[in-house]
Length: 220
Ligand SMILES: N[C@@H](CCC(=O)N[C@@H](CS)C(=O)NCC(=O)O)C(=O)O
Image 1 (tube, rainbow, N blue to C red):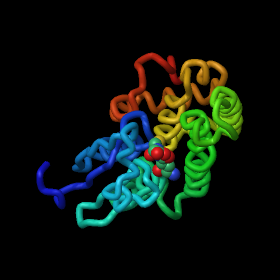
Image 2 (image 1 turned 60 degrees about the vertical axis):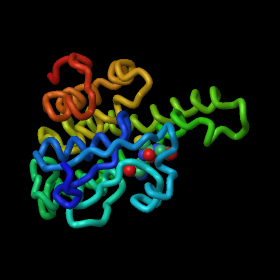
Image 3 (image 1 turned 90 degrees about the vertical axis):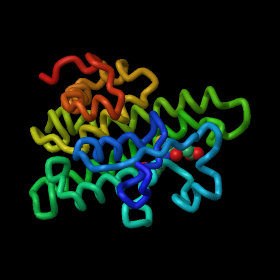
Image 4 (image 1 turned 180 degrees about the vertical axis):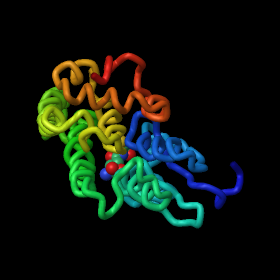
């Protein structure tokens, strides 16, 4: 689409958190343009990109009327509210609203950042040459971050909000796919696997989040 003001522009990189707002846009059929950002070339640190998102991260969402909303959870929540996508999140006043916000915050603030240490060990290792140790430690932290999710889903699943599908299942599925061996995480977290399968029932989630067919098995 050539008219910059006609639709949302999502600054996006494959296999990153940008896949989640892409999923919301596609699930809801909202007109948008994907603008690839080359993280390996450091494009996120260019002046042009920092003017879009001062944090130097994807995703960044440019609004049709101008201006930006950044941060994965905020972008998704913003789109859901603005377009009345109640099937993706309980609206204010809904009895499930509190639980939705709780788990949105947990996935965004605890599970998602735990992966940073694994994927950017050079940034966090206490000294050069300790990247392998950092990655091993990071895997422990990632598993620790998943434990409360597994506990909650085992007691209250199959979805975060019981039987009610929401954005949270897609968020979980994206984060499962970031695990070095997603099948291993699903094997050791049976309730996460069932929840992952709920996301895999949605064609837009399969497509946008790159979920491999058959990975979760059934959603029994
Ligand atoms: N809190 C931000 C984190 C975004 C983030 O860390 N994005 C990563 C990709 S998943 C990124 O852009 N990394 C590039 C870098 O750190 O240089 C959000 O949830 O949107």
